[in-house]
Image 1 (cartoon, rainbow, N blue to C red):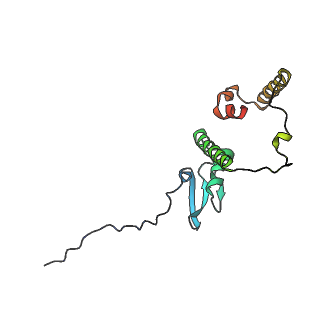
Image 2: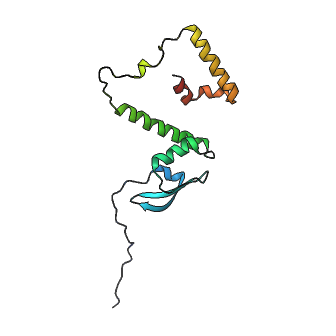
Image 3: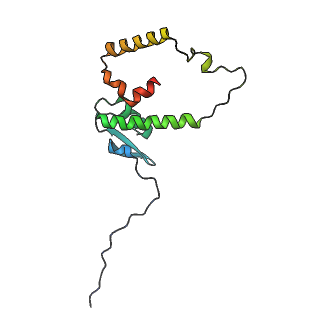
Length: 147
């Protein structure tokens, strides 16, 4: 009689950690440098980090990577902006009496015709001097900026 040995795949123990961040689709993960921390390098411009913090990597792809495809830049700009919006709305500030705030330092939000004309001229000069295409004005981020 022969012994029967069952072939069973070795199961890896689930450590219960978070799933990997989607940033690793656009960033090369290097050697581990701590608990769930890794060295990193950009897949597009080859910039490297000894310790790749997700927020710094997202900021790189949204603002600083010269070789990232437009779709990647757009995705991370949106992600960074959403995180900033969340952090702004979650911070509650209490002002003490006599404390200065931003309203003390800026002009009224009322725009007279002369001021609108000056702002429009400055904006047109900016577009022309910097060589920015006028189609940018239709982009949601530009519309958000103007508001």
